[in-house]
Amino acid sequence: ASLVYRLEVFRDGIEAILKREDPNKREDPNKIEMLDKFFEKQIERSQLNVDKSDMARIIRNISIFVDGYTGQLKFEPDGLIVAAFMSGGESDA
Image (tube, rainbow, N blue to C red; front, side, top):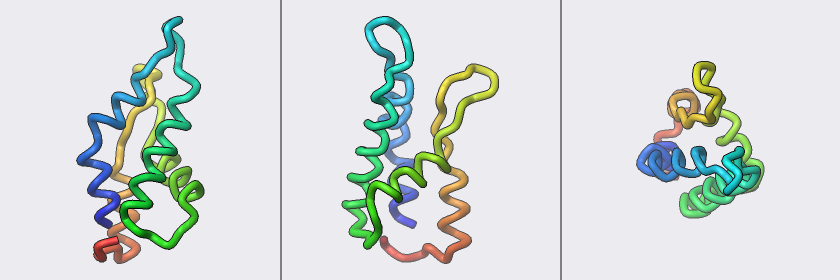
């Protein structure tokens, strides 16, 4: 559960990655890789006994979405928070 709440603390950094553009003002194709690496590092810090790349992809799929109004990628960790609560994720993982 602490991993989920830590991601909320890093919201500004995650959103900065999502807003990143390449020099030609197009979507930066590396932003998904950057997010996955960031999530993997946070999983490592949490000392979870899971496959970091799989878990990073799951976190990204649950918390990153395309805003229907702007078409921009957005970070919304509520789904992760609910999942942690429902799984009994009260530990210091």
